[in-house]
Image (cartoon, rainbow, N blue to C red; front, side, top):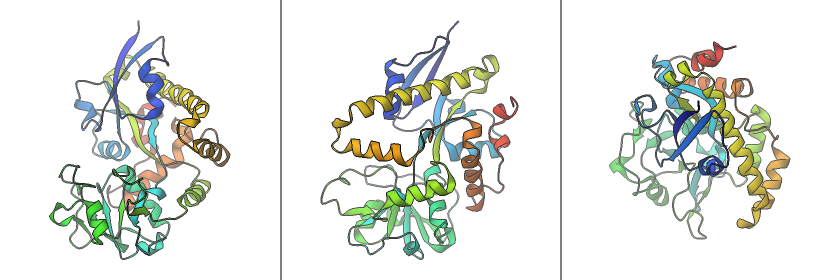
Length: 320
């Protein structure tokens, strides 16, 4: 009998083959729902059996003893963070070290990506206590909501004054830099007025990879425990389907690289600079990254203790 599994994921390009049915399983019928915003509480979501979720949110749930969702160590969103620190064109800041004592905007304090970005800054001597932080909406099109999540501290970590959009504050010089993995509308225009802080962020990211050995994971797949209680094989089957979808999409992107000028140059550089298995899933391949992320959450005061790999992924630890 085929098990039906409805999953909620963002519209990542490499999931296209899975969403279109080009990737199939004889045992698992995966129905892909594309969502613009992550499911807020995957364990209570009646519409989906599995969901893309924030790595930070998942770790916090495990720390709280919440077992309503089981993490699958397939990191559906990965990315280097050096490129995610932006400033205005007329800023004189061209290094992470120069952000010491500056005002930095973030879209959410304990977001996985922002945790990794602060970790990157800390490697250059700029820790949480070395800058002034403001949490807020990126642009006026984004909703006004609590982005401090209980971690605000007067004079160090505060909400954006007057809920001013951070890109507007950056343009006016109210902020010196902003963290964002998703560039706002108009950013890629010739007269956008903004740029990455690091002129050669690619080299910085490659140096980072050669040092730590991984591309940071931001999101992972979470699945309801009752599914695994009845069908424990589903976790690995779903992970394998996600991996196969990425392999197929990578092959198609290499074949049809002319859809974006100079994409072939980027694909060639990635193939030369990164190992073929840079995005491999599973506990063993990601143990160092998982440990480092758990340590960052502790060092940055988001969690009061560092959780182990076994704490975070007991389903896999129990199978070892």
